Length: 357
Image: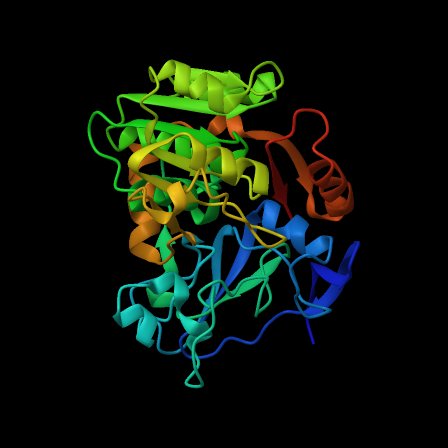
């Protein structure tokens, strides 16, 4: 049986490169030879044991590649075609999909719904930090890559670009809004770009790392707040003349940033939560106005599916946004351990790593 190299979860603290069988292709599937992938912050949560997955599972959910084999029922694609698939792979027919909540697909089962069910790669099925990945429901999920775009240009589309932009979209940002984005990691930077594209007149980027704040300025932040120098709540209220912001986007997943985002909202404002939280959240009484402030708190799991991917690649192809600066390091799949060590420990100014088998 032919085998491939794959990064698998062994136990908390250990993801290792191992040999696994190349997957068989079912009628609705496509086998994609991975040409570029990356590591996500969620993968680090898996590595640390903060998000549970099965031992032996191949990790990773951001694939760019070439179709190697197509299932017998797949139409509209050809072997050798360059494609991406979103981190979320909706089936298209589940109750969640038919209600318009494709990210919450329920894992495509007939036995009930579970949160984050649409996220299957590296969660409930083998992911893409490997030489090959099996894409389920290929006709709903494979999006052809325009010839003019490189792998690295579209590498952010499957997850962080889709997530960050959705944080702005679901918050209902309107022309002229003031938006604060807490944390300028990869998802926060995409949220900053998404807020500007959505029509915000003022975007405030919040972080403690000078390099990330500099990139935030290039992606649409009109003001940056260095939390190592000032209190972010006080500074944002000063920048808004005490009014507060229309939308605060939380992109880190900590109690501190969630609470700060809540405290800078104007009455009736929206907190858009993108962070992955590892512990229970507490909502402070005063910041929440005892529940009487007309606030809205929304959460987002990145939209997937081929139409979402097409739209995001169109934004890149037409020059509306350039996320090239986010790929700061490059590794071969054979060096996946070193890539995890760098990314998990946030050394050397890392934002995203490009990994090529």
